[in-house]
Length: 454
Image 1 (cartoon, helix red, strand yellow):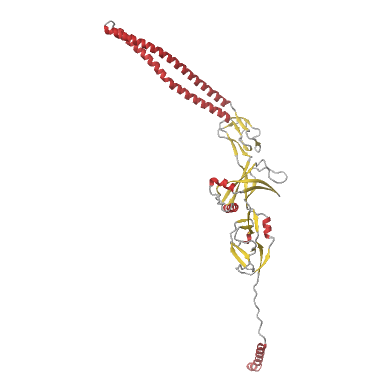
Image 2 (cartoon, one colour):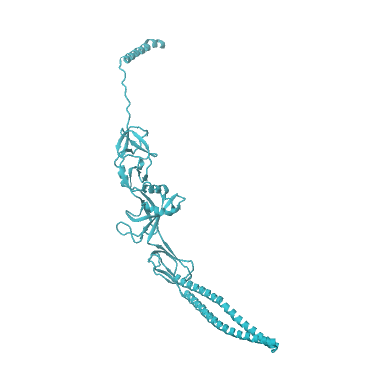
């Protein structure tokens, strides 16, 4: 059978029948039901904002160093005669201890020579006084002789004028008168030199007295005395050694106070200071009053030393700010001091070492407690906080915390108590998004109970 004939007799009738059946089914069937698309809520974790009091704190690390160091430098040279037996590395010596003594022989000789020079100069002054007295007595006699010679000359002149005396006799009387005048003038000249001679001797005595004072001072300097209790850090002197002027014999570290300089970022230290300052107060800017300003603001400090599972704690105080900014890290140095670093040994159980030079310790700076709304730091999203409103809709709000510390952020304004803060950011983060809120009661207590320091 031909293909076209088959198509006309078989295929076309079957297709027509199928189309008719489909048309009947469509025309008699009810229309399909409409399904409304419901809004899907996004599950999120939320906490309820509560007012909490926390103590702002900042942690830094540093190395213990003595607040005072004494370098035993020789002010004079000499042979070492005595060395303190306790002048050994690590030994603690009391205030006033004699570290070493130079041989006093040279200094005693200098004192004896200066004293002898003073006595000789004073004797010369006495000699000048007696000589002046004698010269004045001689001058009085010579003045009387001069008066006699003047009278003789006057008589000779009168006789010569009357022709009763030869000219040679008159000239002899005149010569005797002139010779006497010369003797008187010589004595007067000698007497005129006495004040100058006396002044020279007085100045010479002053020079000798200065030499004596220098010799006595050098004798005192022959002993190197410790001005405060200290621990020997190093020494390089032995008995019999010649110590040169300016040579360092020993270095000792004071034990009354210890210092730790910690490097902190400027912004974190500024945040700590701002968090603890009273309302309306300004930050200290005058460098001459910086230490007093830090004390007035109530900054506190503690030094922690971790020994395994034990933590030793020393109370400290913020003493000053270092002289500059670290060029590598951009941090500022804060110096804290611990009083009686060797006299107290920190809190804790068991044997406790003193706070010794070179210890790497942790310093915790704190200020007055601050009250506000505390949220986990992770809840901040690009400078915004996410809230769930009364209709469980997402609300976004710009938020700048007053204090960020460890895993928490504190706000003193802008957030109402009782607000629900979203901890897990939904995706997409669209204002007005429907939320399925689930209270989180574990995160914030864990952060508050843990380490609150950055």
